[in-house]
Amino acid sequence: MDERLEIELAALRPKVLSLARKFFRSSGLDSDPEDVVQDVLLRLWEARRQGTEIGNAEAWAVATTKNCCISAWRKARRGTLLPLRDETVAGYTPAGSLEEAEAAASVARALEKIPPGTRHLLQLRAKGLSLDEMALVTGRPKGSLKSSISAARKEMLKMIKTQ
Amino acid sequence: MDRKDLIRRYLDAETTPAQERELAASFAAAPPADEEEQAVYRLLQAVTPLPTEPLPEEGATFDRMVRQARMRTIRRWSLAFSGATAILAAVVFLTRKPVVPEPEVTDTVELLQRLQLISNLDPSDAESYDFKPVGDGFIMTARFRDGSEASYILAPIDGGQSFHLVSLND
Image 1 (cartoon, rainbow over the protein chains, first blue to last red):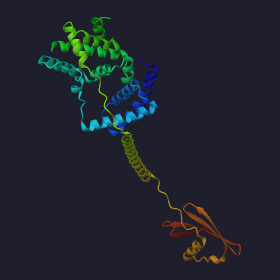
Image 2: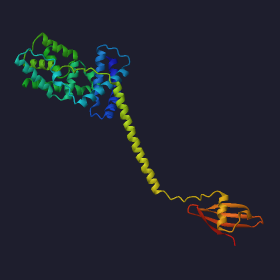
Image 3: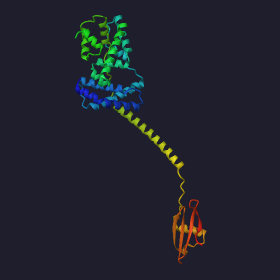
Image 4: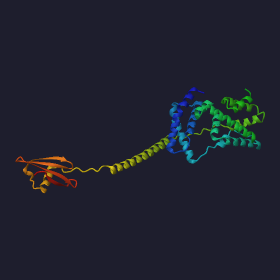
């Protein structure tokens, strides 16, 4: 992992978490501020990967945290759920046969049975984050992430085979 | 590393993102050979990257909401503080030791005029008057032109509106 990015993510995490906590306390929103932290750090990771010019990373992170907090607040007020089903199977394009459509549906069902937190890890991984980067973004130890991802993949594989 | 090895490492979460891309690419080059590989292929296709939603610029809304919440907190604390102060004041008021009001008559001329009303003492006969506070009242000593002295105790009644006069002379 890029050492500069690693330092940036580690340094910004406490500040972003503190700001998100402050907002959630203020707004009375019953959500996990960690979700905002992950969102912000993931955006920073993407921006760096894409070579987006960010002058002051801290100012950028504060502005992005504010936007993410309000976005989370608006979603909570609307009661919006993340469109996991559509998004997670978006990459699978069956050729059109009934059999293949059923296969795609079975994979989607398997993915839905995975706990949301673990599913989120699989999606982060699919974005291309290494375990080190995921540990910084999620604030979880690498070993724990590895075992969660492995268990989820094996469980999904089992479900796909039996369906 | 062959595909079987990659699959094993993938399921154990030991592959790097690059190796996982390599595994997906291998299925594009050569279709799954067996049921196991077919299932892994489906699994690889099923999990797509987390979508990144565009964020509207909401910094001002955030600042306003936090400011309003802070004001609400300050108001709540002010109210609590005012209530506590009022209760404390009430407790102090109810438990305080009653204070006996000091005689309010401090004007010597007025005092002498009152004295004249309740005694046969003529203030103009005296050369000087000395007032010494004692308890709630005074001891007044009058020195007359002939050198004699006379002392009186003045005890206030009704918060100093009127006085008892007790002569200390023979």
